[in-house]
Image (tube, rainbow, N blue to C red; front, side, top):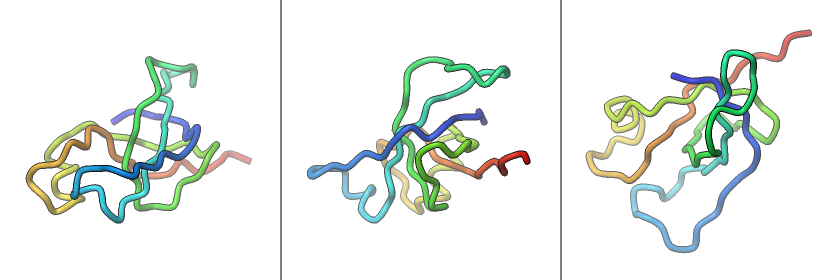
Length: 87
């Protein structure tokens, strides 16, 4: 699992059938100081996260297969949770 910030949304007119119905987000992985850690990635999300939200992402294939209920999908990252903003 890794902390990330949602920086946008992605749309695709042609995509793998397993992606139908999933929201695609562009997420920027973050390090411990909340600085960018690598390149932005595409992640699936069912939580309603939007631009600016901090989220927890995973690249664990087993977890993603369980979420999607499919065995073969090109998905590499999925949003597991949203981080509550601190007041």
